[in-house]
Image (cartoon, rainbow, N blue to C red; front, side):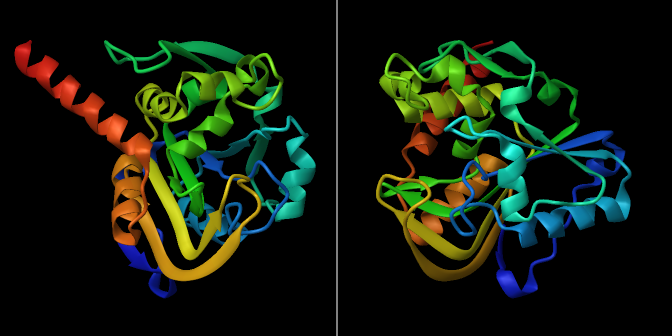
Length: 248
């Protein structure tokens, strides 16, 4: 669903009302303001909408690719909301979760924070980012949930081991392994960078995208003419899964 930013009202699906724990994954690995990171305003709207209908625990979970402490980053970005638990991926207990795809593209299992397994509803909220001419939206945002220490590779840089496997394939695998319920792309402004996800130029856009993460990322990509290669791999996997179900 594409909404004009001026008219944006966050509407919750009915099942959120029965959730006991709701996890929100912002794009907030750097102490750099919106639109390089998720805006405080969009988070506040989502949290306020949840609180209007639910007393569920709301958990904010993010990790720094540079393995910095998240508490000061949260503070710098203004993420100080009442009755919201703000956690650091780095401090999590990790569990190994199996990729449900019969033929994974890159990774058969992922190490993820165990808190994900105890949450009833999962939301990924990102700015509209284009980095290296590729869309960087709600599904790619899930990379921040992985422990850098396990995926940094031999050279010590964040996600080096994942890039060696083909990052777009990894993101496709992650989409099926961590089935988030909702994606929100805050496209009031569009952030365009070359290689560094926290350095770039800003353009006015005036749109907000809300829905299931794959559909949201696809809609944002198509509406703005952005190439987002991981979506192609997800589509391939969806076709394979559909064929296997038909054969079964």
